[in-house]
Image (tube, rainbow, N blue to C red):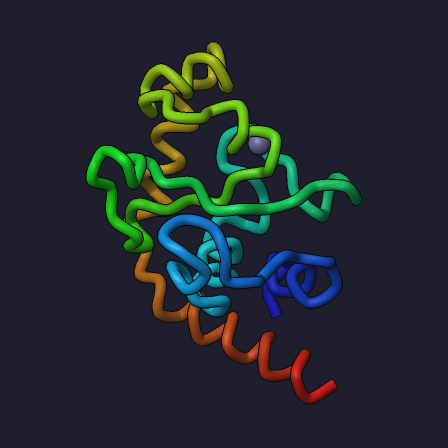
Length: 136
Ligand SMILES: [Zn+2]
C-alpha cells in the first residue's frame, strides 16, 4: 500500500458526494482517487490529514465550473477547506500568486504533472479502500 493509501485508510476523510451541481457531481471513489493522486494533501499549501488533524480535503476546479470548467479529473485537484474558501472565483494564475507566492511556478508545474496522470489506477485503489471500509 502506498503512503497516500495508508493515510486514506486511517484518516477521517470526507468522501461524501456533495458540492457543485447537486449531491452526485463527483462519486466517492473518484473523489478519493483524486485525493490519492495528489498525495492526500492540498496541492496549493500541502495541508492534509497526515500533517494536520483538523485538515479537511475537498476538490477544487482548476477552471471554475462557473467558467465552463469540467468535472473531469484533469480539471480537479485536492484542496484544503481553507484554500478552497480563500480562492473563491479567482483565476488560477491569480490564485497561485496569492496562495503560493514565490512558489507559484513550482506549484503550477506540480499541478500539471498530477493532472496529466491516468486516474484509473488511483480509482482502483480508491474503490478497494472504500470496499474495505464497507466490509469492516
Ligand atoms: Zn490548502
